[in-house]
Length: 157
Length: 103
Image (cartoon, rainbow over all chains, first blue to last red; front, top):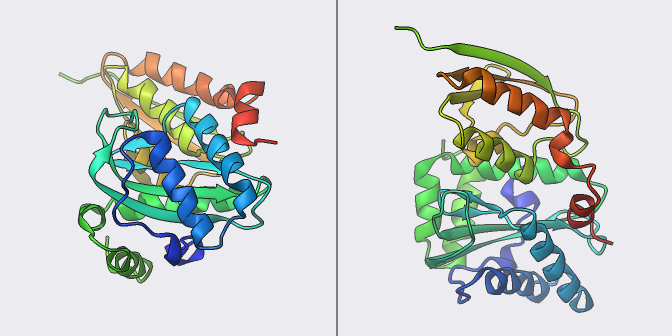
């Protein structure tokens, strides 16, 4: 699976304004709404579901990366977005570091395979330190999109 | 002097495979031990304290992986890891099912 298969280009955010976990999640879900990927009447339900998942254990998986996610019946295919926060957000990560780089995923309830393949792709690409660093330093959505395209074309790692 | 070393192979039997929460449970467990632990799948070897590396293997239900541990704590941490897989990462619990699949 490639980034282009699940990342909505119009929902990419290079400069998150939120400074806490709920705010960051809300901003990314709003970005998916603005991009027409989710319905307005589902926004609150999706935000709540993602926060409920965070209660089971943070999706801050270390190295300044978080993958907040949920299954939700309102989507019929995997949808996702990427966001960057330069100052970083306290996400109660495993390694105690703040998070600069977010990959938010919403998947249909009966599709665990796609969700796992998306996580596999994200983490495999992020193992490349250069890709990870460039993404965190990106200043515009266009720059992030270009990096994702390059990763999709195997230009990292 | 040789440090104690041990290996175990486990089958992944939870339907979601090794997703983010499962990978985090593995990494947390290994981080609490004094052993150095590698996770091996199809000849690819990763550090079992790193969630990103564990997830990069994309391990699905029905697949088999191995753990290799080195250090005085090796046997104990492998026992705990085997138990974690036998328990399907606690996914039978209602609270977890609800949060993973709302509504």
